[in-house]
Length: 360
Ligand SMILES: Cc1cc2nc3c(=O)[nH]c(=O)nc-3n(C[C@H](O)[C@H](O)[C@H](O)COP(=O)(O)OP(=O)(O)OC[C@H]3O[C@@H](n4cnc5c(N)ncnc54)[C@H](O)[C@@H]3O)c2cc1C
Image (tube, rainbow, N blue to C red; front, side, top):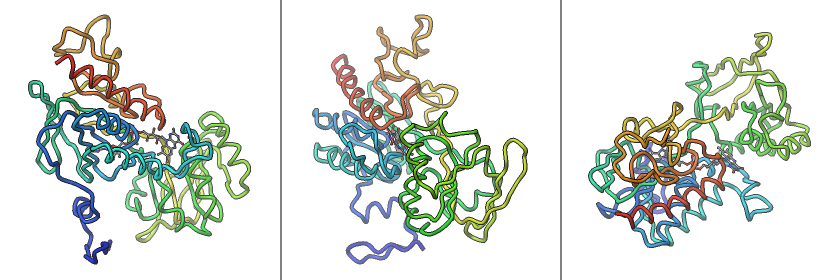
């Protein structure tokens, strides 16, 4: 396992992501060597950039290391995205965006991780893990953020076997009638708690502080307050876990007294913040201390442009320290970490791509 039987009856035993993608009709190999625009990352920012780029006539390729959707694709219900008064599932929203990008002619490569970026003259070279590369006039970096891991190593072996980071949608149904633990005090944790409560016997929400009000939107706190079988445990953290191939028991710790307690549970969902995974941009574009890509006016300090900046103008608003390379969405330093702002960044990046191309 996993065994995958595709629609045409082919059996794939423990397939690699690329092999699986190819069998379910997703492209993994670029059709050209050169594009106007490479978008790295297929979350809302990348899909936004692809839709606007391709619809405005740019030869656009989007490269995604897994499947399109990003964090938003993990969200069971997005309630605050403009135009959806009854909310929309993240998977539905991003699948529509993917189809829209394809309709306008974007080439989407799935299961391809980008591991390097070089500026070679006016070309921008994007390198893949498997050794090949594509070149373009411009690049939009839209690689978002990844969920932070719990510090306790005793849980490592249960990742995917009872312990899940930043996801609930696919696992929720398997938690039917069970006691489920969830770590985190922000909106993503609140949404997950509400969603899991439809299936679980009881959802235990663990927060290290005294209450949710400092970190979660009021509408979610109200929803949680109205669901009897969501129990909020203040001042509580996860200290460890045990199991035999699958999580079976958790150790909880009171952060004030240090006292610990063991509880039986096969399910732990973790939403404790996220960080950008931009190590591959080290030494190429300027990043802040946490790894977020610095853009536009934030690159100009005391009237000084970034080191090695070659042009007689300041970087455009979403432009990185390499001309023609832009950052959009959660990966950008000082971004808002919302679906709407990621999509907005993607759209704005394209108007700046045009400005860059016209000035070449
Ligand atoms: C559970 C959950 C619920 C949320 N709910 C809401 C909500 O209700 N409202 C709201 O406004 N926001 C919500 N958010 C936040 C919102 O989803 C994010 O702000 C948004 O998805 C950011 O979009 P992005 O495109 O910048 O990055 P992401 O969504 O993180 O997408 C980045 C993509 O890039 C890919 N990638 C990363 N590195 C590489 C690489 N090297 N090569 C190729 N591909 C790469 C990743 O696989 C990923 O698909 C939620 C987030 C989560 C996790």
